[in-house]
Image (cartoon, rainbow, N blue to C red; front, top):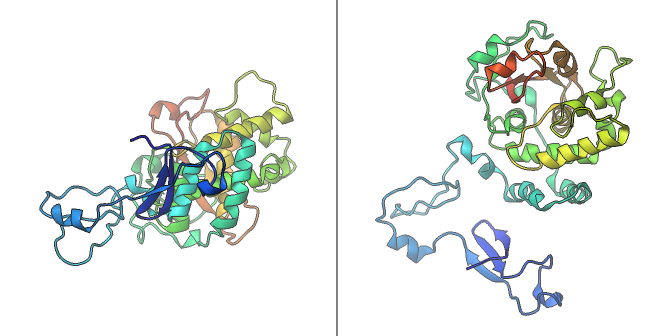
Length: 337
């Protein structure tokens, strides 16, 4: 059976029809007349469960999946056990929203979509400073500890904690600070995208980006510098204001997809999402000019917490870490707790 459109109704039920349209009711649309909406439950019904009670237990991919081997008592939802379940911990509407970006074809469409989502998403209530390595049972990254620079202005003992290195590393760091686990990385990615879209004028403003630096009258043009670090930048192109904006918008379009790597513009956005300063910690490796651009304090648009949190740049490849001409090629981020 070929399904051209699926409409999610609630946790265990979907609606579908054989034609795709933006309308919700065929009766209100001349284009969809005669294409009725049909309903189907995702999971097996009670009779099917009874038939399968003697089947061999199998691993459950969804935290809401029902264990068919349980003969007595009401079925209970299973909890996520591994990092692979990052998205399943999200409320359904937020989980659906990040995937709905796949259908967005232009920055204008993305801006419209973000304007709708921001009304429903609500404020992120969290205190990143309450997260600690012992309570959350985080695993220390021993290799990253060896590369931690000695000039970070903090007297506390900080340890780099491992997060998923699958392209969701920065959203996972944000999820650790916001929700004390990395299982809500998709929500953080969603909030970062909305932040960058809604406040484009700030993230392309040099004075705003310089707020955390010690020299706010620096001659550096950070929007130009950040554009050169973007995957959307083509070496040799003269960076005008319009081209920088185009690179910025293309980069945002790219990061709407799950498991796509992020960079310095997204760290600025995460600081505002968490309403907390972030110290971007770049190791003393690779090109020293890169470290001058990417290492330092980043301030949010609005404060809830004045003490900074720490996010560390690292790489999966040792060759990248010592490349003096380019700096890191594969970017990962670790939470320092």
